[in-house]
Amino acid sequence: MARYYLESSDNFLQIVQDSYRSNPKYDEIRPGLPENYKAIRTLGDLLRSNYKSLSVQQQLRLNLIQKLKKSTFPYNGIIGYDEDVVPSLNRAILAGHDILIIGQIGQAKSKIAETIAENLLSPIPIVRGTITHDIPTLIPESELISLLRDQELSRTIAEFFVSTECEEIIRNNKLDTRIEWLDGSQRFNYILATPDISVKDLVGQIDAIKLVKKGVEVYNIESYSPGQLLQSRHGILCIDELPVLDPRKQVALLSVLQEGKFTTGSFPVIFRPNTLIICTANPIDYTHAGKIIEPLRDRLKSHVVTHYPKDIVDEMTIMVQESKMLDRKDIFLPIFILQAIAEISRIAREHQEINHEKGVSVRMSIHSTEVIISESERTRAIKYNVTAIPRFSDIYSIYQTAKFELSEIDDIYENRIKVMDSMIADSIKKVSTLYLSEIPPEELIKVKNNFKNKDRFFVSQTHLWKEIDTNESYQKQIIQFPSLSRILELVTVKIISEQKKFEKHLRKHSIESQCIAIDKYVDPELNASILELVLEGLRSMNSSFLERRDGIYATIK
Image (cartoon, rainbow, N blue to C red; front, side):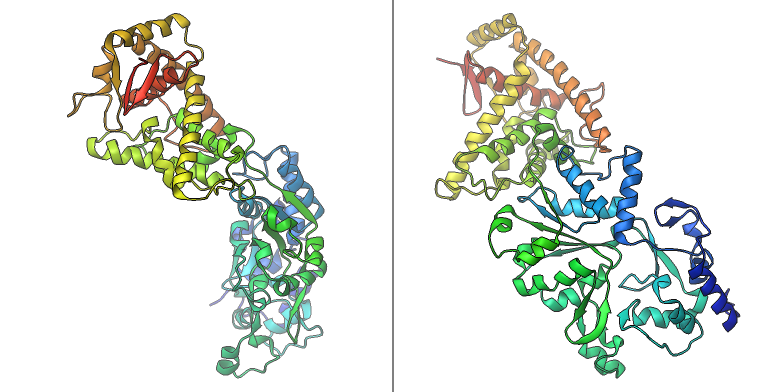
């Protein structure tokens, strides 16, 4: 028998009145979240705890205050914005503002919105199975009593508090109505603005199918099907690329932003979604008159401007965090490969022939990292059953992830390849010479003499460090270059040190990546990758004595 089945009509009245008119009986572990919330599983449990809900703005504000007091970073996974974007977000949330985030592609605009929901919203109790996230204690006191008594509702206000499905569940189950707790990630609703989104998609509509199936009247609340605004109730609605919505659809958001409520057509019901709205826009569209209608732009109270990573380490951190391939044990990613790819993106963002208005997304860095790992698998790891460790000879595989638009010259494939080749060469030169900058001059002279005697070193994607089925292994060749072997040892020590520093940096951001961790044992294939770095560094120095032709490093004639 259900626990509350025998509750009398008078008891319903007393329980509801006590709950609505008394202070909470619980301590909070987070703003608005009872300490014993996991034990609150039914409507009866919720009422007996005297639960009091907080608005989305209150939850965000109080959770942020709690984190700031503890010096806890409020936005896990958001990197490189500590000095400007994060303070702006904090101010907006403390002020209870709806937010417009302005930035170019690949600047984590929608990720920021999702992160706010995940980190700054406390779980809330809803009636299980309600798509509009119905919190039963928001039903007016008299109406909830009528539902528990299975009486006709006498509505004094034409306002949506909970769905008719929720009301029916409460009528049927009384105080045994099942409650579930939704966390912030479950209350984040994302919409990519496209031309085919309609006003009805946003505010809901009178559903003809419900009219036919249930035989309800047009103006009965049962005929209403909720749109995105109401499906985002008690959470965050992120509208990505807001300027894509035409002005008529943007108008539909005005009353929500101004008054916290909306209506749909001639339907005589007021809806209050209790939703924080976060929109995103590209700077080009944001500054273009008419892309965002002026009243809407004005009602999005805080405008927060994002940017690409200003620090190459921030870009590398994002690359590791966001890559989908870096949690496997058969991959190792040298720090100088990360640096080279990040440097290519940095060069691209400043390149005079690349369209700066369109931008160069961090996704180019992320996808290039994934592709260069795949290239090391394709050319060596799969065939020879060795660890996939990318090298500079693999780097031209990232042509396929070159995501930029040319502006000063024709944007054709051949021109894109020329620009990409130039950026790759500049990146490799900068990164490789950096690691050779502390090599003693006398060691460099020895290498120069070595090359005069032995003449050439063969480099190929398919050559391994140790000999397997080829006579061109790097280990066999380097025996003829003892001074080159000494430089390899010195550079390896520096790389291991830098790799450990970066691994420590990642842990500060709560990023654990198996492919970055370097143990005392160094995989032989890492030697091959570092050797290619060394050879490129020797070739790229101001007083270089090496040149490269068709995979052969030889003394300049």
